[in-house]
Image 1 (cartoon, one colour):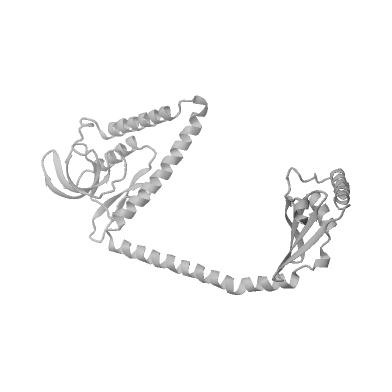
Image 2 (tube, helix red, strand yellow):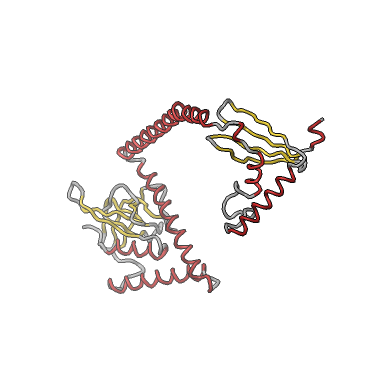
Length: 323
């Protein structure tokens, strides 16, 4: 005689009472031998590769939730069964799919004398009490209790997903078909990695030489570098990103004031002379440096791809440089 289906409902209600946010459910299917089997799910993820004849809560011994594989004996009040531990007594997924023997009472101790509706009502009350206790424990500050509860639920969802994922992976390693899938996945990963390595080699062989040729063709000449003009652009904050505190506001008055200030500063800085030097990098790009003795500064620009780009400036000692 098969185990009463009420035992499955009692096991689910027990799981919901200790882990109310884990989304416990069951799924039923018929195998090739025309046997109706049940699988236990959490967050819609099955906890085992195969189904069971029933799923019960072992309230007599281990207090775990067990998937029944066979019934080895029966008395007037008890079923004696073999099974596999699916969920530990604290509500976590069993890492070790160990075989156990359980004695399943035909009438639950905690619900003896109650009809089916009363059992559900009692279990639902236990679930609500567990939820209220959790919210009270996590929501000491009333002003932030709702946000705290939401964060706890989200973390529980993520933890449950990861726990189910790795738990199922350990279980599936015992299935030859799943081992084959894992090997196929590794082969696919190696293939993708090889494609990426090949693509990188192609970039180094094709794209990099093209960039070098383009840099040689568009490298700006020394005559195109106007030191005063480039220095003015630096003082106007042309090289700074939008929103920078040193960049003038984008209105006519601010731009005009910045332009006039830059012109006056450049003329004063170059009044006693300045020195411009160029350093060619294989014809691909050119580094230009401008020494300003009046300001004890040296500024650097990079000429590449047809334009000059400001790099940096540093303080110098003109007397020591000259010596």
